[in-house]
Length: 404
Image 1 (spheres, rainbow, N blue to C red):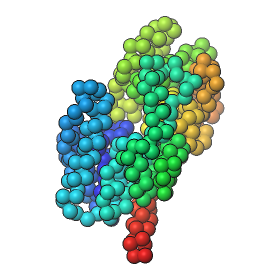
Image 2 (image 1 turned 45 degrees about the vertical axis):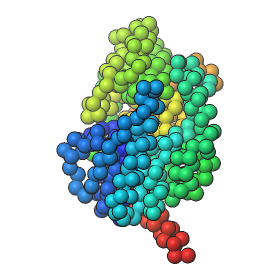
Image 3 (image 1 turned 90 degrees about the vertical axis):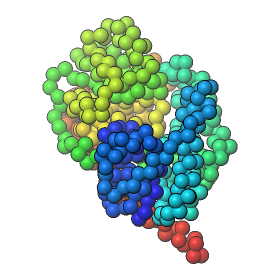
Image 4 (image 1 turned 90 degrees about the horizontal axis):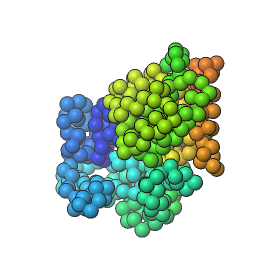
């Protein structure tokens, strides 16, 4: 099929949203689709250097926002929405025919896609964004809780957001990566809402089951140091674990909470046991997964969590909050899920107990095998095959309507 892919963020050799755009583009081309990718020119250099076959990249200039001087965040959103408008105009002006349009990045419930206006079926997502931060844990959000409160309130008003409303209502299929977003999409009139994780793994990322690393166990945490990722909760849980057994905590990522984390590590007497690495290249993160004993995922608000998938792909068992996107995933013994406690002060101890459970070497190899088995179903070729089936269904349905 001729597939028009909207991937504003798209770059090789990167994780997160950038890796999602690249993974969809290359995997769809690998299964034989003629793929045209709409993306930002900021990724031109790495894309052209990689030069993947069978893909045409259209670099749509990002219009300069007018709201930057009032709010950098609003400026980012304005630039992206105006980029969507510019991309639609360029596609319409080119006059080329496509069989299906697929919007993958940004995977946002709130920001929609203008490609529903084209005379082809639109597959929207996978998207997230319907989830909300837990009110009982407002202290963990610190100064960001007022912003989080506004975000929670805005979810109930999405019916007034014409971009969101019209995208959902006019999409042939809306793909969502958690049950919260599914519920919101259905309330907005989504005719066909299906579950699919946004993230995927390269085939060579997934390893066979492995043995636990020797030496002092290492707990690994990966992510941005921002309040919704709850890195402070990871440090508190590790402090509880450290009281019970020797262990190390390695945290990869940077962000505005870095100074607070340093101070907390010193205050808790953990300076000799905690490594705050800052930002780490994706290839280097792979080595961290391979040398760790358990992965810890503490996000208090997340559509899913690509780091969770990456860790399991490297045969690394995980401990994660049974919350939002993770709650929807069944990875068997590969992941020990911890429910949010009614009293936030109890949660670090519960996470520490789960970490001790995973670090029992008697079952570690079994958990590693389960991690690899689950991750093998999340590779990009599998996602491309699933998308191909969805495309065929959407095209047939549209043809039936046109001939009725």
